Length: 143
Image (cartoon, rainbow, N blue to C red; front, side):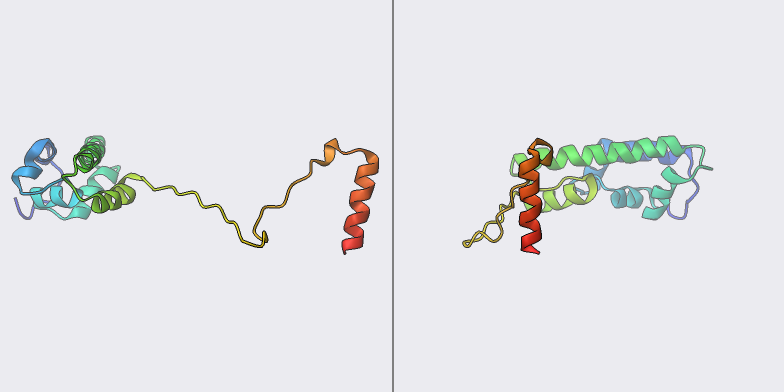
């Protein structure tokens, strides 16, 4: 297998077998593009380029293989993490790096002296002419 770099039918079948469990037979815990490349005996960039090169007649199939691999990886990471069989920190790292997941946290910025408290906004369309004049005058006095 080593030395082959042209994309041919045999690689597609081997890729399918890898995703369907061949990665486990290789001693891998989850399928990866690097693992697929090793399984095929080619460089990782070669596999990635097969899905990108417009001149490759099997391009769409390689795009499908790539998306399928990512989907299997994502589902396995989530399920095994929920079952506490995978380290959650590593799973979060891979999910955020490869699958667009992120952790959201909400931070309320409050200071003891109130200096970070958001200032109220005024809807000037609802103010009377007199109130608008007072507002403008107050701003002028502050400048």
